[in-house]
Amino acid sequence: MSDKDITKEQKLSLISSRIRAIKVDKFNAELNIIEQNALEVPIAEIVASSNKIIDSADDQITALEAHYTSINAG
Image (tube, rainbow, N blue to C red; front, side, top):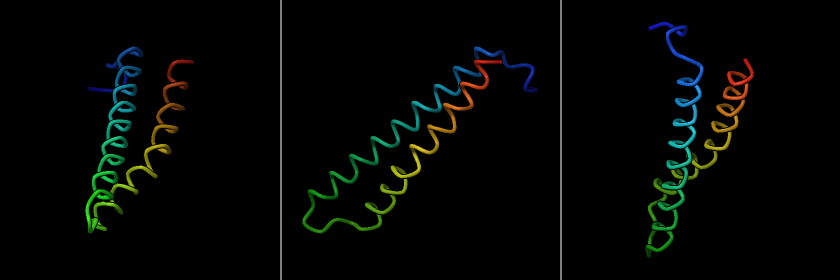
């Protein structure tokens, strides 16, 4: 399937789905941190991994939103 086989509406829908998925991943990472902070001895690897997900989520969303805008304008 080439890029031309996907309609503008399908592309926008796919991007929106990816944005939602990233937001869900970010929220899950935030929950992981809350859970770890409730433990007597939090697992540092889980906290660090969750923080990486949270830190990168906003950049990913910004990039996808820019791409969405670009496709929508075209």
